[in-house]
Image (cartoon, rainbow, N blue to C red; front, side, top):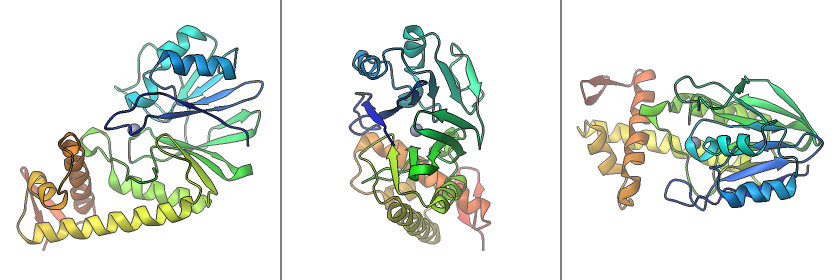
Length: 262
Ligand SMILES: [Zn+2]
């Protein structure tokens, strides 16, 4: 399929080299994610689709994916903005068209189907192009890194693992992620992610067994040599695992402390 990758130009500790948005060209061009409103991104979009995108599908409400929506709406007032609602988080100045699992978009390259892949965020979606077995993967997968599960901000590790397995069941041939290079062998990466999470879970169970009983203590044990700016993300990841262990009946909270269920 024809896809035009358009860099958002927002490098940083949480975005790596910066986000990708993707334009599917055609009579009604479709843009995957809104970027952050940088002039260079808007100009590149205008060069690729002079009348602008007819449809913007936002994969989830994290700022690096959505905050450019008002700038796009200013420049191309006819564009429609589509996402799964996240009450309290969706930008109020945009008139969102709600989508759900299974919503289909017609494009010049054929149909794209919304797959609700919650976990990284409750409203997170990927788009599936069955004809080419391509997934627009948003923040589900990223080469050379794992994906953050912000447990105190809508993240849910159990849901994320189910979402990985759902995408695995589609047997995608390639994934176009929001961060990092195109993933040409996504089945291998998904396997690696599932193994990684199992490994982390064992580490966390071991930490609880050795009486480390707070998120901070467990994070200090597991994440050594981490850049300080990423410390809060590491703690969120530990919390996400602890919540999953609680859901699985293997751990429980006692105030701010965590203990194994024996
Ligand atoms: Zn995100």
